[in-house]
Image (cartoon, rainbow, N blue to C red):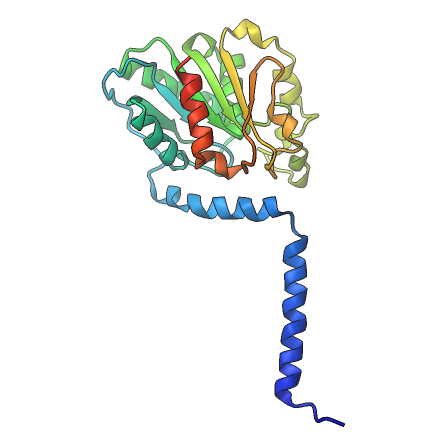
Length: 251
C-alpha cells in the first residue's frame, strides 16, 4: 500500500478546489464576464471632473450634442465617444453630470444644462445621446419638462424604454422606477411620442445583462437599430455603436 504524502494531499486538494472554481466560473453567463471586463475598461472615467464648463467651441456645421450618462456613471464615461465625434468634425459636444437624486431631478438638471449649452452656442436646438437610465432622464425632460422644442434628435443606447426585469433585484430610488410595471414607465409610454416632434433612435443589443429582455430597449415610435454582441457598458467603448451614433446624428 502506497504512502500518502502531505504533498500528495495538498496537490489533490488543490486540484479539487481548482475544478470547483472552474466549474463555478463556467456556470456563469459569459455575458456577465463580458460586462465586468468592459466596466473595468471604463475605470478611466473616474478621474475626470464631474462638472463641465460650458463654452462655445466654434460652429462646426452641426447642432450641439449633449451626452447623458446612465446609472452609476459620470460625464467621463463619454470620453471615447467624444473623441470619435471630434474625429468626425463635431466640436460642440457637452456631457451633463448628475449625482444623487431622482429621475425627475436628473431631468431638471439636464434641462438646465441644455439651456446653458443653447445660450453659449446660440443654437435653437441640440441633439441628445443618452445611455441606459439617461434615456429615461432625457425622455422625462422632453415629455414633462418642456424640452421638446429644444431637441431635434434623441439617440438612446441600451435605454430601458419599457423597463427592465433586472430592476426587481434592487429597491432603490432609481431602480424602482425602472421596473416594467412602474408608474414612471407607464406614464411616459402612455404618451404619443410623435406629438413631441423629436426624432427618436433606440440602439439595442442582445448581450445586455441589465436591461432584459433586450426588446425592452426598443420603443414603438423609435427607429430601433440592432447592434449585435454589445454588453451594457460596451456601448460606451464600441466603435460599431459610435458609427451608428455619428450616422444617425448626420441625418
